[in-house]
Length: 365
Ligand code: CP
Image (cartoon, rainbow, N blue to C red; front, side):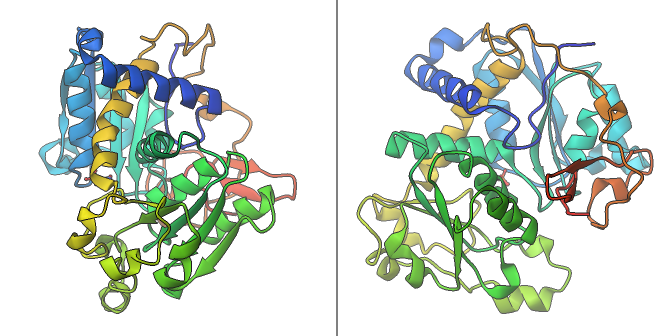
């Protein structure tokens, strides 16, 4: 067995490991020169099957600032994907060329599937409307730097909660900390998916509530996490036109917010935050994007085992698709990778109440 860990879900690291990761990011910001050769000879491969500015560039900048090298593609049509190669073969090949891989894929569970066939760490850089764990690391790091803690916070999450992978990951990650609660703000059509709400209900009753407008929620939250309504996720573009401007943050609405509140956004934005809000000292989204590079530097160092204690002697199995979670059931989510890659075996996780959840896309069976 090889020594390899992946980051596929925002909860793949323990709270202690996350704190170590954030502490190293603090040190990197204070003394970047100290880390500028630490990835000498290492190669990061970026496999982006969907467009990106922040995630891809910040990963590439992170590796370059650590003294390593990069290769990859930002358009799958420039790779053998255009000839019909699947992601399972692609990752098998590039894991012989590089030391660590970052994958963004439009199909839910794509990076998870790739990780099962990889000899090197795979980082999920966003899989369809499912999860975006490295954005969440960025979000948590920014919240920690602003509040000095990650617990006892009320988080308003606004916009496209149905398809917004950053919102799903943020809820999963922040609900692990003591006494956090959530306010979901969206039109009915873009509500938080049931599997996320069920997960919160399983943890603690009354951990979230739902509003339709920013005005109803903004006075009671510590963090307002805005998101874009994602045109590219809609099968019906008339529906997109109907809902796209449902929730817009303006200077007038900011007058209803507490002084200590911060506004975050994974970006890119379209028009859900009026540009005049950028001048408000509570608008932290550009700082949040910059933090992403330092957090990803720390993440690369951890997954490449360059911090001394992250693996801690533990050995993690490669190709653990041979384990006992395999089921004969089929995932019903048409956007799940198992319905696009016939070679994949189905995997489900069971909960105490009998619920079975697809290990790739999180859909309830
Ligand atoms: N936040 C985020 O994922 O941005 P990009 O799509 O530009 O990578």
